[in-house]
Amino acid sequence: MLLAFDTATPLVTVALHDGEDVVLELTAERPMKHAEQLAPLIERALTEAGLVRQDLTAIAVGVGPGPFTGLRVGLVTARTLAFALEIPVYGVCSLDVLAVEAAAAGMPGEFVVATDARRKEVYLASYDEQGARLDGPVVGRPADLATDAPVVGPGGDLYPEAFPHRTGPAAPSAGWLARAVAEERAELLDPEPLYLRRPDVETPHAPKRVS
Image 1 (cartoon, rainbow, N blue to C red):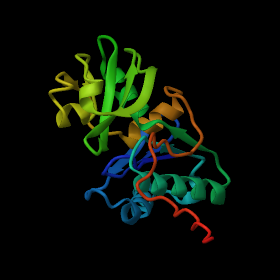
Image 2: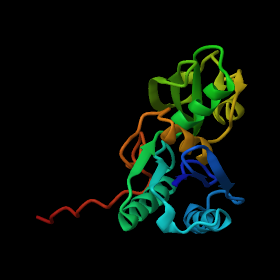
Image 3: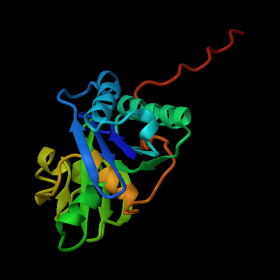
Image 4: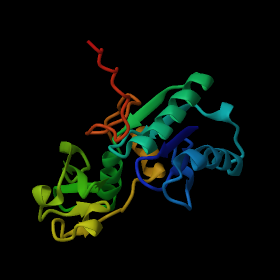
């Protein structure tokens, strides 16, 4: 049983995949509460599916790009569970998950995925009609990344003047993350955070010596 979860966006999402298809998917009800909601959501998913942690055979986790705090919660949880259960953990770019879902629904040609990077910026990557990444991800101002191509993700809703052709899913789905891993539809990455820019919170530098 594959456990998948993504914390790259405001709402935590969790799913279970039995090797054939997704058997259960849950999404948090409150945004921006990753640390408080991820573990209970995982336990709820296992309980509703009649499983225990020892039934898990692998973990899939979204690696972003996304906010530092949310990604850290998901990746630490994934690595900790994988270590404790002695099972593999696979990372997937969260933009790739959106692309895989959009491609499965049918895309007539190349498209981009754009998500909220805060600071009035977006994360963006381009894909072919099969959902394979062609370029990116990058982070930048919507005006600098503007395109007339179809745009998947919340970027089109947030910045319609830069991305007028909004289509497809609005947020990464743990169910599609699980499918992407189980069916090898996306590049598998190490479970390391994809920030694209320095986190807001940094370790203080050592004080300068007083001469």
